[in-house]
Image 1 (cartoon, rainbow, N blue to C red):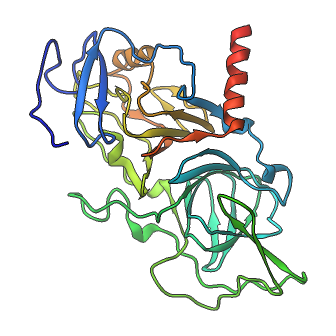
Image 2: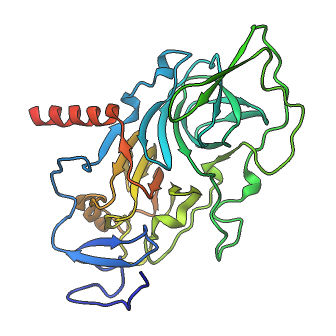
Image 3: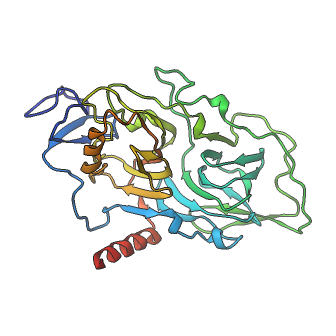
Length: 369
């Protein structure tokens, strides 16, 4: 629907996300933060509710989850959430995979939370370290060789990943694509085994190919479809002195129905009265995933490895006590040090049984206390 003229009714601040005083700033928006929007100024914290049902959301420490690839070299990542457009999985491998992998259902975008090592790929050797995004195009054959236990967030997209269109800032911001690390061609030698298994990563069923030679035998390559890494240290954070900017300005990669963003350390807003923390909201057209890589917010440590799912239409946001603390410390805090990976999906995400069972167990444990 085309936007109507903006109206103002009742008691509202002069500008959005500023000088809210005793009110609670609640945004009801269409199509994320880019469509028609209503800013509702409430008396009470809208996240103070008790939820029962399929859309209650999930908060889970991924450090407590055990993918089979953590305990078995022949194991696989653990699927946590999925829909028709994407699959979000966890990998904690610490030994080299005895097989090769080829995702035949989508691109893979992997965030390295912990661990170092490298991928052997058809494009060459691709080293990884904490904070790296690793991009593996659909159909690429690869094998992971970890130096130590990894902790990966894997975001598979059914449609091709692409960078956001260049806006008014130009094509080198918020990130300079020349800083992506592209592998050099390398032939990986045979290691003496009789057959080399290439295991398909597919949404339904199971398939393996068996070669009498190492399938990573590429002498050279050319083109614009290739694997690469990009570290969040090289990502330029867009900031504002006068207002807290919406999450969409931190967009990194996108595919149909899937948007991946980096929330990284930055100077805080300096205009008195500006709300420095994200406002309450309930995106009616997107599910939201937040994965906490680390850092802190105004002296409060973030929980590394926590993954949080907020279904579309459900209120979420930082609790009121944290907002009040941020206002009290306005003259003290000059930076926010968070490191959060965010994923927005157009279709509803389905939490797998391991995620819902874990969440139910935590609720039951809390009820006994």
